[in-house]
Structure formats: C-alpha cells, structure tokens
Image (tube, rainbow, N blue to C red; front, side):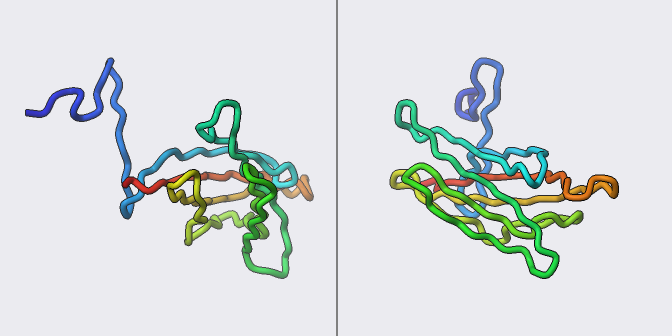
Length: 137
C-alpha cells in the first residue's frame, strides 16, 4: 500500500526527487544579468553561518572557443571564469564540474544564452541556468 508519506507528500506539498545517472538534483536556478557584472551563487555549507560561494566571471574573446577556468580562492570560495559563453543559441558545460562538500561528490552544470542589443555595445545580457547534483548514495 502506498501512503501519502511514502511518496513524499506531507502537509499538502509534494517533495519530488530527480535522479540522473545515480546523481540527485539538489537545485536548478536561472538568472539574467549583464555579462560584465558576473554573478555569485551561495549555498549553505551545513556549518552555522558559513556558505560556499561560486563566483562566475564572464569574458568575451571573438577569436576563441568557449573555455572554463576554475580557481580555488579559499576553502569556501571557487571562482569560475567563463570565456565566450555568450552564444545566442547557447553554450554550456557538457562535462559537469566536480567538487566535494564534506564526503559527498557534487557536480555543477552550467548553460547560458545571451542577448546583445545593437545600441548597447559592450552590454551583453546573459541568461544562465545552473544545476547542482550530488551522489544519491
């Protein structure tokens, strides 16, 4: 017999779990911002008052292909530099970025599209979607 609580249904709210290749989706977030401004993603570390910070920095180079550079700033800050992630049709990470929080593996997937107005030279609007997965074991 299936009960409401056995399928994650409590107090009128369903709490689904999405699993892909044995990895559980923790969240997906989308945001629009100016390429020159970049954006930060902060997630709770599980320790009182501490957060992990992912700093996303964008740059365009008409000569090159999309590229990612990851720098560990300190024990709770990672800087992710994304070059040429401003394709109108979309650019993303086909191989997830892997990292650890505690003893669990996590993966970050990034997908972006962009919009540049002809009157706004240097003002590219980025639409970025970030998904984070974790080992479901």
